[in-house]
Structures are given as C-alpha cells and as structure tokens.
Length: 133
Image (cartoon, rainbow, N blue to C red; front, side):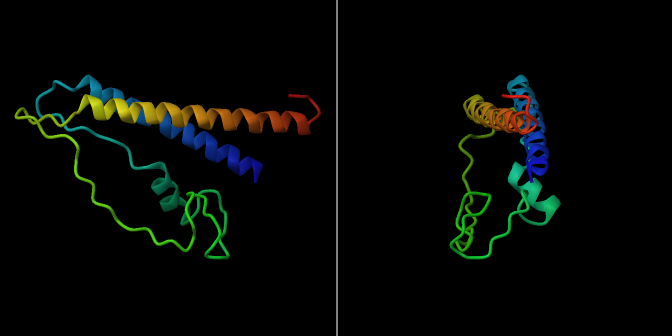
C-alpha cells in the first residue's frame, strides 16, 4: 500500500508540474490573437479513467463510507454546468489573467501539500529501516 501511495504521489506531482506549464503558456499568450486558454483534465478523472475506479484502490463497502475523493459513497454526483467567468475578446483570445492566477495558486498549494505528504512517507520508510527521520 505504501509503494502504491508513493507512486500515486509521484504521478500527482508530475501532473501538477504539467498543469503549471499549461498555465504559464496561457499567461504567456494572454495578448496573442486567437489563442484559446487551455487546461488539463482534472487529476481525479485521469486516475479514475486509467484505473477503473478509485486511484488508491480503496473499496467502499457501505454507502456511509467516505471515498478517496472525499465525499460519501452513497451521495450521487450531480453535473454542474459552470458559466465561464470571462469572455472571449474581439481578437479571439480567451485568456483571463485573474482566472489563470487563481489556477496557479491552486496548483501551487496542491503541489505543496503533495510534497509534504511525500516527505512524511519518506520519513516513515527511513524510520522503518532504522535510519531515523
């Protein structure tokens, strides 16, 4: 289980680095005519599609259990159509710098949490091997 968690954290960090690259590309092309803002598919969807369920391999046996995604297993997901908070400029550019900065802050925070968990897991391995923290 610990090795699977380490692999999941590694994939998550790689995803977050790629997302930061996409956000940087969006910001760099904020004044480019015809450029459309891009983003990656959410990590949870990628992992669910590749593994056919929970990315951690956790099984839910009761509707009152909490899933790996953080919600109750019995709570049905409802589709929400979000209205885009920005408009496409007359030049055809759809980049909103405010929106991109929010995505960047979210990505940075997610990366920080993920690396913190990775460090803690590494410390547990070291302790288990008798090498100390």
